[in-house]
Length: 63
Image (cartoon, rainbow, N blue to C red; front, side):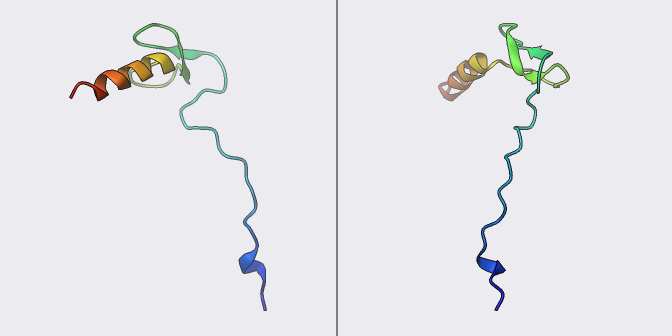
């Protein structure tokens, strides 16, 4: 009988989130000009974590 079916899979380290930079240079927030979590090569409007949180609150309460 083959017992490999019940063996747990090998553990692997989780991959870093897509879009985050390994190091500087970081893109500037379009609202407050603070550094963001994203590399300068990121396309679109980049927001720092604080502005992203505030923007989410504004859009959630806009009805």
